Image: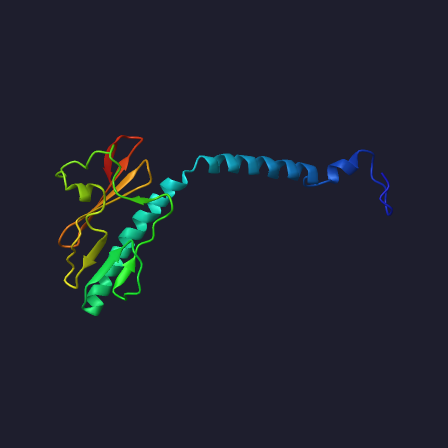
Length: 173
């Protein structure tokens, strides 16, 4: 092989090449793209939105307790959004709805609440006070398959339970 300045022995040119051809890179990127799409197909957007709603609910409650104490006034949390400075809106994903589906049993140890509480309509807002007390005691959020149950004690203690449809039982979060 003649490189112009000096001669290389026959067959030595191929051993000097390093890296991959453009065709090889294209094939690898294409295959990895297909594999990642297959992996994303297994993710459930509604399930992820229920996880996000759970995080937002806990963080909003913490923020409400801090604001109530700092302002010396009651703070409300709710699904409705308004212009009231003492109201923190909670935003749910489009797959997450308020209430407990009829086919899901109540969490263990929970007394059968009124129909409104079962449907998630009893306390559309939660009011927290500067003394770290709260008015609402029960919220259900669901994504059509799994259900999040938030129980809030009068002293502001949060208990989260999650109905796992795959396990057919309630688990503490």
